Length: 141
Figure 1 (cartoon, rainbow, N blue to C red):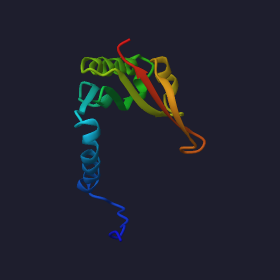
Figure 2: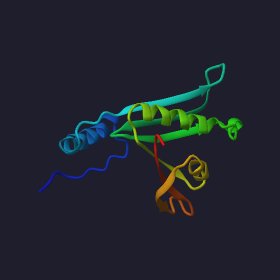
Figure 3: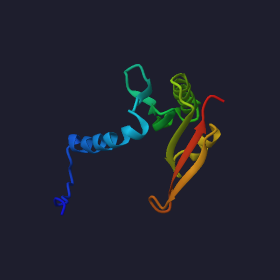
Figure 4: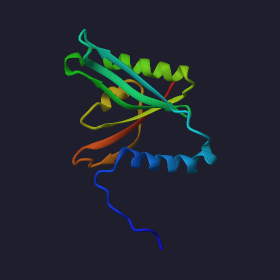
């Protein structure tokens, strides 16, 4: 018999952290400790307001891009491409050989394809009728 399962609609951050700690403790014997390094680049205006940025992390030779955003007024200027290039170059400098990310069908799949990313998985109807698309790319070519 196990302890009761309790629904928690508003977990505290430290409770969520405990789940990650448990997973890491389990995983270390198989893959070694994580050496995750975070990577963030911003473009700001004169007042310090963020106009664009890219955020991700590097671990086990992979760059994961978790966010790329460019203000609508700057889209189409090459800034998104420049941010991605900067992140990829930094990842290669840190020994990464691959990158991956996800985007939605209504966001930027064509943009990532133009940058050399290839689709490796898709989830349909998330939310209907859209798709969540997963991309990967070999770095340092």
